[in-house]
Length: 545
RNA sequence: GCGCCCGUAGCUCAGUGGAUAGAGCGCUCGCCUCCGGAGCGAGAGGUCGCAGGUUCAAAUCCUGCCGGGCGCGCCA
Image: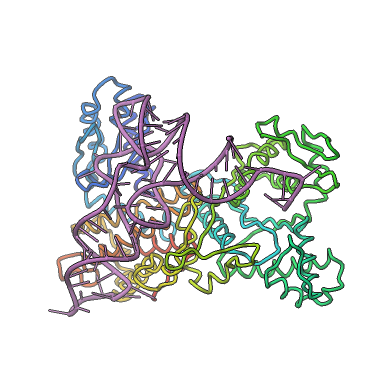
């Protein structure tokens, strides 16, 4: 294992360098198979970073973890030189690293040298990724539930892009089939002053559509439905735009239909029974076979979806991520089976299931019923709590847990609301930098920070340490498809900036014997990290509030 | 009955193998001659649903139960 090799390479990620040194020392002590972790201990007494390397080496070397830790600590200390204050062996065999101010300042300088791109490309390997989300029947305005999909899919796409992937965002429009027919019938009924069919659409917007379409009462049903879809889609685009959600591609089910026969012909296990056409999905572990064409001759949603995915597959993405609602989880198995039948690699087709959203007001649940037409529209939510709060709250929780949005809290522009807390921290930094003046900031950024005599305040070290986490946080958020982690990260960063602000004076640092340039540099780095985090979440990062 | 998701502080939830389990809200008590008080600090509050198992180490992995949500159509 070449030693100093890895560490001499310039990297925009100081932690990656530290990790490389650790990996080098560990490999030299063992056979290279151990993959040590570099952790941030919660306890300040356990150092700035810690590693489990010795405990991993113990079974390999047949020695006690603590004895190995002693030796490994020494060689690691040699590698790190002046970057490390001391290396301690603790507990069952942890190695705790206490970094020097010099290391912190060097790391800070690297963060700043990365400009606005700190953490960019953290994925390492770039893939061409398709993210399909929000896809829904274009038979009504976009709801809060779809809003969660939209916020999630968009933030995920932003994060994937930032860490280095080539992302395409796609909206699949189910503009064909029975639901659309019922939609057309519903519009016609309203146009004629009748009540829509039982299984039709009863929302008030249907009446508005009927009024907006000339001759709706007499129009051909298919044409009427198509006109309705057109108007709904227009509204959907407007809402998504307002919600800062960008789509690269709208795929229409209508366009998929002509390809269905050809695609189904490529599948094994298609057979006729009871006047219908089936796919033998049980051959691949499904509990029952699935209908492709009903005995009345109509295609099922499944059949059309297979053709849609065949098209997606043919487009040759490295990875396709589809975001579906919780009520669709029963379809995962059969769709994956079909994907494989089509020759797709199962590892390159992911389905993310979004759990439901509930709105609460003063502790009570806001009742939503699709049938009764009392579903809350995303637009209504945006009117109520604003785009920033809506994006934040809809993104705050993991996609696989049901989400409660406390409207009262989300609405309040007070100290209670986490999204304003983070934005406030960003604006506050902007205020400080403005107070310092452009020249001072420019000079600070041109300074060789490592030459500064500044003794970093513990709050400054904590904050810088947090900033250095960004590449890892982004990588985790991307790999785990977990944008919500970024809300937590942004909030922690804001909190730690607040502590830093409380503990040290930035403008006029000299008054207390400090180096203003270093402190300004910390501010600039923190501001960029907050701005980037907020941007990836689709939340504004205001200069003033 | 079967499948998927969830069960962590009063509430809403982070935390997918590491050392004394965290945040926000709510509650209690403090802090404005100070670069933005839309702020800051302190405190109370937890058998990580239960029981086994794997591991040097489990909220985290495995098994079985219990509780909640969502599905289980020739609907989409």
